[in-house]
Length: 239
Image (cartoon, rainbow, N blue to C red; front, side, top):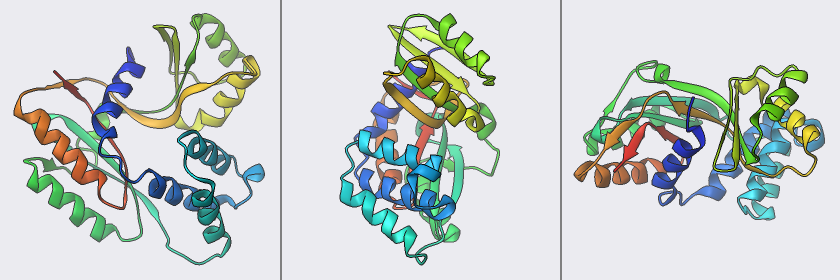
């Protein structure tokens, strides 16, 4: 994979300024997890993990509780995951994940942003095959062999383990997320994850320079302003 953590950090850095709806995003994800698997974190691993991530990102307790109460009520929206893909400003590949209760509305809003920013919205599968869908864990460490041995002993299907600048990056298929996290915590009880998420990692990078940098930042900002959008993934490398 190579430099997966660094690539992800650069991707996050370029879109972090446009993240004005962190609370809303987590609230929606917690609501969906609770509605699909039950509102008790002790019996719903996906929900427990989402709540842990929300707290790590300093989401207030009242936002979490509101989402849980909404799910317990049984009513509310029926959100479905959606993935949109295309070519963004400067020619980079872009994936946009969303939770939507109206696919036609979300598609129209995303298509409008692509049109405004000299980008091209593609069909399903047009660029997603150039991304690896992985669960990623990043934590402090120096010995990738010890980590790999612990994961293999736990029968985890490991995609990659690498060490760079004192940080260990573990990549596994999304289905191995919870088994991997439990195995790493068993290996080191006080482990603190810098990153613990399911993400899309580009297989190649694409340089973005000059005026395209500003255009991409505008594009990312407009996309992130859409209520249904959860994350943006891309292979842009900014000079």
